[in-house]
Amino acid sequence: MTFLHPEFIYYMLPPLIILFALLLSQKEKQAVFFSEEVMEKLRVNSKRLSLRARNALFFIIGILLILALAQPVIPDGKVQVQVKSADIMIGLDISDSMLATDVYPSRLELAKHKILSLLALAPTERIGVVAFAKAGYLVSPLSFDHDAVSFLVKQLSTNSITEKGTDFVQLLSGVEESMKDQKKRYLLILSDGGDDSDFSEEIAYAKEHHITVFVLGMGTSAGAPIKSDTGFVMQKGKIIISKLNPSISSLATQTGGVYIEGVNSDRDIEKMLSEIETKVQQKTLKSQEITKFIPLFHIPIGFALFLLLLAISSMGKREVVHVPSAFIIGLVLVASTPSHAGLLDFQLLGDAKKAYENADFQESTSLYKKYLKNHESSEANYNLASSLYKNKKYSEAVDVYKKVNFTDKSKQAGVLYNLANSYAKSGELQQAVDTYKQSLVFKSDEDAKINKEIVEKLLKEQQEKNKQNKDQNKTEQDQSNKDKNNQDKNQQNKDQKDQSKENQDKNQQDKEKQNKQDQQNQESSANKPTQNGMSNKEEQKWLQRLNSGTPTHMYKLGSMKTQKDSKNEKPW
Image (cartoon, rainbow, N blue to C red; front, side, top):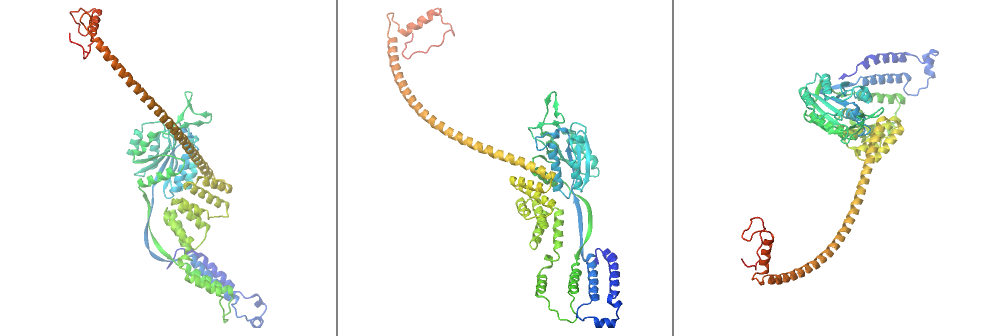
């Protein structure tokens, strides 16, 4: 057996021995004035523990508590522990084009929110930030201190620099400079893509220096004007409309990374983090062999509690003591309760917290549920709900967050903020807005305000979409009824037209029959010989040739159209 913290024994046990030595050596106040024989006659023999005996018990209790604080343990083998991390550098575009408001509240503010979300989603990763426009500026080196990185990111604005424009080569150069000791470098860019359509130079530089680029596009294809202190940015008398440059996707895809177009929710940054984790090779920062121990501190604590009961009860030395039945029941319950569900529940909570810190949210959820089977705790419920949220079980997280109730206003504001986030993730936007408002009543928080505004915008878009769908369905129904009426009308017109056509065909047949009869009569008349022995048709042909000026003995080819011979015409 050994002690993990023997300093408690070295520094606390000697003063305790001195203190109780003085107490035990002191005489009672009456003994100063009376002899021991007189005191024996005056003292009532109650057959209970004397003051000195109780002090002796308290002295032993103090020793046992000090031993418990020193944490007695038994070695239980050794394990190899490695600390790994994925080093990710973030490049944030702070050029003036990021002031465009085609995404809410602006491209820059939304990009900063994405970075803060990434810092919260990746607590075990080293993350650094570089701000860039025409040149790159290191905001934070690679760090595990995400609170400090978050603070620095919140302070960034387009006023942080004076250069205009966007130069990605300068950004890549800055990343390569700040990550010299890394063989492979990973860069996440949040930008609208600038104005260039050709990124071949950037791609070549990234490949040469082993930089894998991931791009989260900020903005929309429709674009928006850029606000300035005097209104909107103008060029040649016209307001500039800044749009998301889709060409920047080539910088990501051709360097082995991923391109995702940003949205107002956190789905894009969650997907981006998932893609980064699949491609990034985690670096082993530290490897150490540690010894596992079996804790024994509960043993001296148990003996100390037993002696404390004896000391405060002042039981007589020879008096038969009837132990209360309630105490017996308590001992039976303690004896029948497994050790891991009683005194060792603190270890269960420690394991759950450790699993949460290691991003093993499934394991932490299981451990917190196990603890809550035997205990009801707002803190434990809050931690369980947070584990469920991280495990993307948003509906279950909502149910557990509702059980949490803190008297501290700041803590309760945090509970309501997380509950609102869970509502938003599960698609219950109206409940999310209402809960954000409740959170802001307890405490004014910038993140809660931003999230509330984002969800309110999404809710408004959803309502407008539902209204449009409803109007569209109504229009389609009206059009369907109109088409049906037109179809009936067209069918009626068709029937009338068919009847008219039938009558017309009948008249046409009668007319053709009459024409045929007249033609037969005419041909009969035409073929009838005239006085000069020619038929009428032969005579007409000769007259036509004579009138055209053509000699009768000659026939100019091509000057006359080919005439069709009648069936009944005679050759000549």
